[in-house]
Image 1 (cartoon, one colour):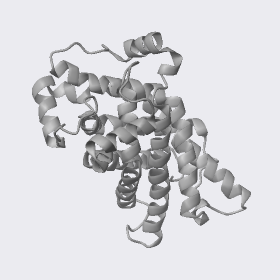
Image 2: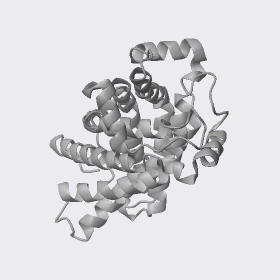
Image 3: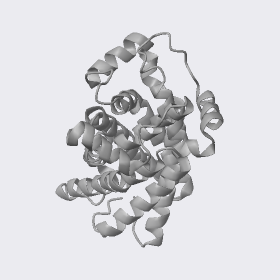
Length: 304
């Protein structure tokens, strides 16, 4: 449902709060996904053995303890204070503008392709703003591997990470990997926002869930999670590897990273971390959308 008339400030607050809850609950899965995607990238060798999600979690618990599963949580929260409100509210507002221009009563008459395009555009805008925080999150998540090897981590916290990256790599360094970042953001939000929006109303209209309730939100979040993961995983792998490398990196560009990954590790390497990615996006979207829809209801706003 289009909610362009709802107060923007209130929607921003509710989206930020819902994102913080979802990120905190599912962050260990995101960390597992990142560690899996980084495995083998530094060596650039086909001989790098595969490590599964259970093996990664076991290694983190054994070498870094329980808190190791939350390495990089603070920059992840900071990122979502910018990223999620921009993409969610941006999608709603863009949809509202398009609907009003067509003199329609609601946004459900919009085709799925149009919704996908709006979702992708909203995601790109949000990711450009949030990219520095995403960079720090990835770097801090990767630092856990250094600690497990008895080495000193590059950064002691998000503030130092921002400062040191700015000092050693310049302002442009804060947007390292921004190209694969926005590619991933386009694909993720094309799948997530459009699919959730479309799937939820499909479920409601076909009376599968019995109304606009938690069952409709759950089914829609599962569908959108699978769609966004399938579309975005290759770009996510490239983004993670590009953002984790320092000033003297292994890859010259996103394309170079893509080529070397396929050459040394095979095409399947582009979907490294698929299960933990879907395992995170599913619960993340469930927690986020259920929370967001409930908060909107309590605030007296119409559903998403």
